[in-house]
Length: 128
Image 1 (tube, rainbow, N blue to C red):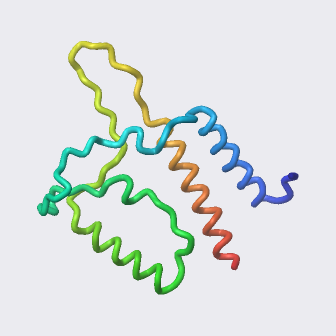
Image 2: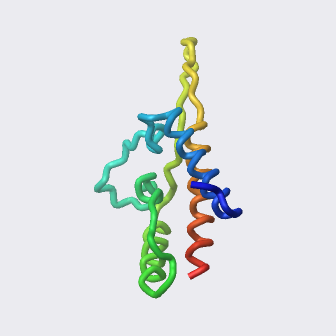
Image 3: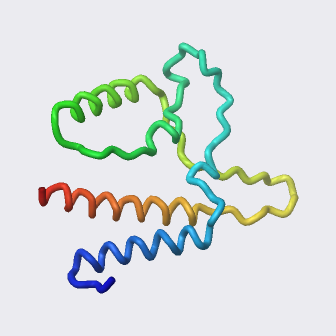
């Protein structure tokens, strides 16, 4: 495949970054630093419930039309009932033990790739 235009360059860049990330972290998932959830799933106290990472990391095929708007409104209404949102978290103890290296390199790179991919897909969708 030859790169013929700016769009091809962007797609090649995103694919190269995704492959590099996968090569560096072959067995890693986006949930590697998911905070442990100690809350009761039957807890009716909405203020203490958190939006889990698995609830907001997702993809949709199309963001146009009445069906998408209805789903989006429903999801936003549901999320408004929660008191917080889970984010990747690293806990480090400070009890004198050697602290192992922990960072958000994977997450930062992953979400940057997802944002770039979103822009490309939005651009394609707008061309239709």
